[in-house]
Image 1 (cartoon, chains in turn green, purple):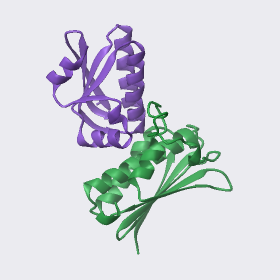
Image 2: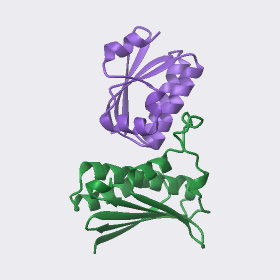
Image 3: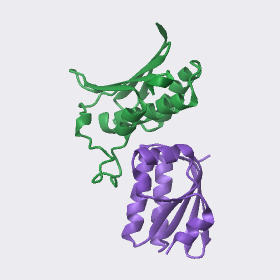
Image 4: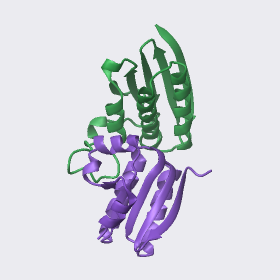
Length: 142
Length: 115
């Protein structure tokens, strides 16, 4: 059962990260989730929107970032879509491997994968990448 | 109010940066980068970051900590971290950076660890 669907379209500038995080926090606040879940979703959303702005839309303000949040009884699904040229997360090296540990970037996707239960990146045929993330509110799923 | 406020003090030849706020992409990361660059230009290369007031850090902020660590290391200096919050400790643990950074719970112990 879908409890709530929220959509937001943001300009491709760094300040939009906070806007997305505030929206998701508001949605989560009405779901009464634990602080642990709220933190996990917050960091995943911030990283996904940051990636969409920097690496997807390359801060081109003529392109937008689209955020959708769907809250279910025991979970939340969030999509973040950019209008860039497409992105393959497989090309991002694991930042915890010893040869990558001192790299200054590449941890955003790692955080998304770590803090969310299910994550999928889809390169859309018409252009752009959508990351679809699911977080369970059930303790046993974390 | 700035996203990240940084107050500087010294203990002998060690510079302590008391940080308050958020180290995230944009203003917070830039503030940290600017502070470290300025200290290195002033030949201050023993730096202790007091992170007790840092409420949030993202992957960009962690990248900036790594960048600071390597920049100071190139100048034969040392960067150490003090008073990690639980969340920051968790993030450094899952990224395996706790094995890289020298982390302290007490300021005296941290200051005495500099060579």
